[in-house]
Length: 356
Image (cartoon, rainbow, N blue to C red; front, side, top):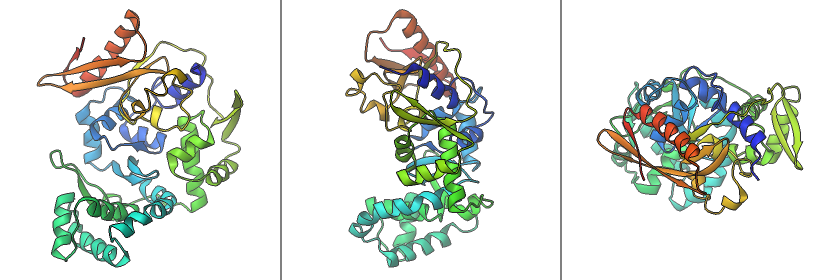
């Protein structure tokens, strides 16, 4: 059965109920990092946790470089703050490099090729310039390095992990890269123990109650790292045992005394679903099999429980939304989800149309 008490606590801590953040930067800072490979949906994930932000307003924060998008942690694309990118990457990148070793060798991205690629990319981007991935491929071709497809992807992966490049502003629908030293010139510097404690604190404060295996999945770090971080935070992070499982959360976490009805249309890869290894809190075990792909798609949430998924179709002046529930929905539940669809349409500046 879904644990509604934990689910509501997570909704509260993830800013999906009581919204205490004033800007997209506040949301990213609070959550630590926000998965962001599905960029338009990731913008919605930030706006869901705020009041009064539409798509253009959230993207402007990204365009201005107040939040950055890079490969970090698990790794996949995440939003991070400019001030956090250096310590977070230095903490988590070594494990990612080890995991990528086989692909580096297979694609012949050895240290020599990488050094030449890195130097060419730096020269091309110096002075505040931004380039698309295709333009960087052309830069590398000019120095005799063939870089297309996966080989280009892993060269860019490596220069991101090494804090050479990160996101620049989009050029139309295309993403660009800029130098980290120019895009994030004033990063916060932390020693490894400080960085570990900071990441552990942010995760369990914003995502808790959560288990150690949830943190290791989210961060890409080890169980030993998680335990070491918790040991440094005994006065800030508390442990609670529920049904034999050990959950961690902020020691100052206020209890949820009220569970008002809440309906949400979450984006694909939202932190409410993707940031946990154990999904028994928000998902009925009977729906686990059909929901396997849902965890990477848009979830419909009613009162903390994932009850299905949703699809969108963009039209000229409207967004058509189709509900795919795991069980029959009552009229009240469907009305609540329709209201959630209306909020999403408002974010896009379009009219909502609920498909039959």
